[in-house]
Image (cartoon, rainbow, N blue to C red; front, side, top):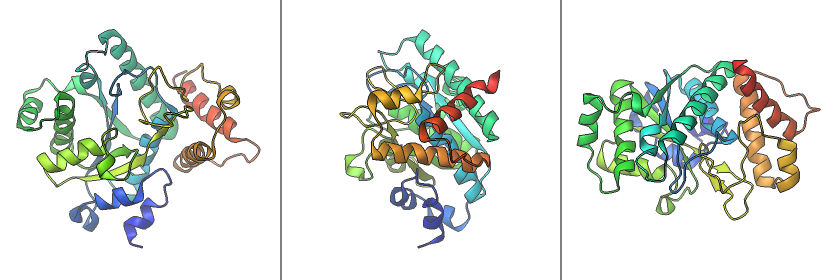
Length: 287
């Protein structure tokens, strides 16, 4: 087992083989630069309605990788402009969700002590520099993908990003298409191979027909744990149950939360109490 495999296996929320396969030789020899991940505000057919608990995977895993690889800054992009490229996304709703995501991410950073810079796509994507990068992207896969590729180029060029964090449902590239491997593969094919990628596992829902989903987008047709004042974890567990796989997934998030925040779990608190406590802590950060 090599050094990087040992590190990745310490975080149960990361995919080991896909991540190892996309760490460049340059990165392996001397990890450097900053780290970047993006939060979308829409799935393929519907806009987000709230901030999922699973999104913590990205922020916590980004800090995990930053520490283990001794990287620079963490950059988080909220893709508001990208969402509006879909006809089903209402500008008012998108703006509302943008504000909610910004506030929640700020709260998470405050209570965990993680230092990250949050960017909105609309804050830079009208600049001449970004437009030049966008014009340089040659892809036949549509405007959303074109912007995804331009974003990676932007953070690589202007923020010294060498590692992008994404998520996967399928570890087999041939089945990709509903996760970020789809964008990253196109980036490597069309832009530059001088970028490394790491991958978390997917988010989870309580729906048997669609158990796996984006970590950071929750749509109206799914039952999901949200970081929201109306969330009642005990009630959700009672109404929908919690499978063995989902239990392990949630425990891994709670354990990584404890690791990053240097907190000791009270053994008398069950999983639902741990999850509820994390959500309440985040919500109270701005009070």
